[in-house]
Length: 199
Image 1 (tube, rainbow, N blue to C red):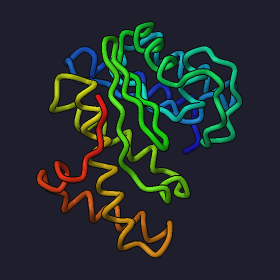
Image 2: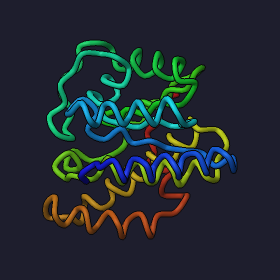
Image 3: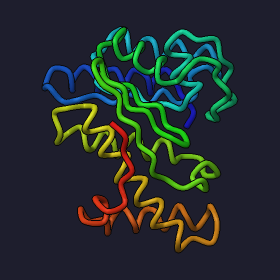
Image 4: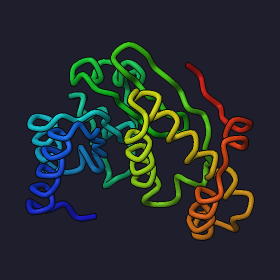
């Protein structure tokens, strides 16, 4: 949605409260690189709160990592540098886990990288799939102490659900609804059979 100063203040309060209570913080840097205001506010949160997981698409993460990119709204644009290297460098710089979503997701911690290769191409036609992914990652991080494992597991479950949903969907509109149902009815056996991870 539209970012405002009030919303950022609320995010900062929530992040500080979470930091105080030892609750993991996931920051979706949605739209980073699109406007100076969004860039400034992303860096403000990152500089003044402990963020455990930073999530974004290729151009958003590249911008946060200091690369020169121009994001179009919330859509990813081409990034010249190796994405895995960008994710690892940012993870080390910020001492956190970095998630780059795309055709192949990159989950980079300070010491290791996991690739998640699930999902469906139709997801790229739906605004908000990245935001939903961030919510699932945040949920998993609340019950898994290892942020790399939490982020990778969350993405696998979410994207396996998308693959299941795509079989029933007639297009992007119905895919979104089918995804809600697929996430709801997902079970461990299905995830284990369908997961495509490279560690």
